Image (cartoon, rainbow, N blue to C red; front, side):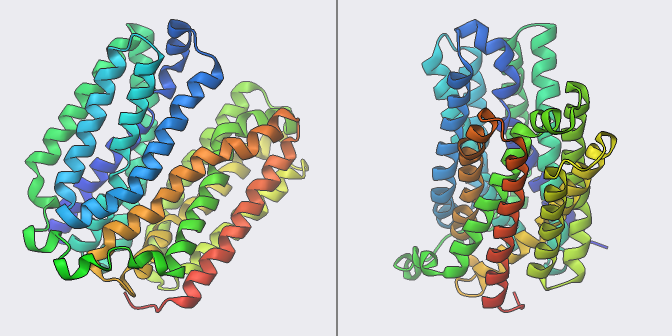
Length: 399
């Protein structure tokens, strides 16, 4: 039975992660209202999210140093404050520059959560319960994603998009208050939170680690594959399998729900098996094989949603083991004082992958090469397997 303090820390960090994912989708659900209100094209609207991902990616790599220097508590509160300001700016926007500024502020807020969250979990949760903590962390993020469109589009449809933005700001302010009131759960103490002067000279030493770069590449590859499905799966399934719009949207929902179920199962698997790289490889190979099967066009239309759900489950089940593997890469050479830097740099691959995915797969969609998109997803997942096996080969199991 988990210790009460572990439950408190896991729950609070899960709540923070759900908040970050909610604001990850601050703008996209409101595009149907923002585009006519400001005369935006799809390209102009999409560029706002490009700004978000670029700021978040660069900021995440840098935020790890700030977390290691000043501790995660202040950084988390600063990130949520950025979300509140972004939502207020969106609600008051009178032109495209203000929308871009809102996207940049939201990206800046989003950048702090992985280095801060994983520093707290790794430093304050018992090792035996870390895989479960990582599972809760991933699941809570999915819940934040699920809530954002319902909340924002619901208010915009019933009242006004500006009211939806201000409502999001209110939620952000409430989240900030919760984190502040429970600040002891995220506080490592002044001595433990900071990197000592003797370590400053080697602050960038982790960049010389091949394992850290392989972890970064792994995140980049799997997120590009995920981004392809998140952005284009409904259209791909419509063209390859002749699904209706509703059925294709349902198939994407099945993929995302399968991923959530996989994260839950992955936490149990990671707790029972220290060979995390093997679990990840097996899960991603299965996901890649399903992508190849879908690309063949041989499945009956009624089974597409189930196949995507199975793919999502396989990919999701690799999540907790993935986080444990990054922990091993960090602690094997750099110790606990480097958690923020290593997690911040490695997880910046997520933002870069999400930013790059449309650039890679968009031209394939425009050219009508829909099965090639699925083949590309399988290829990226296969390449990710190679990187994770290399990481596992070079790292000891202890950690």
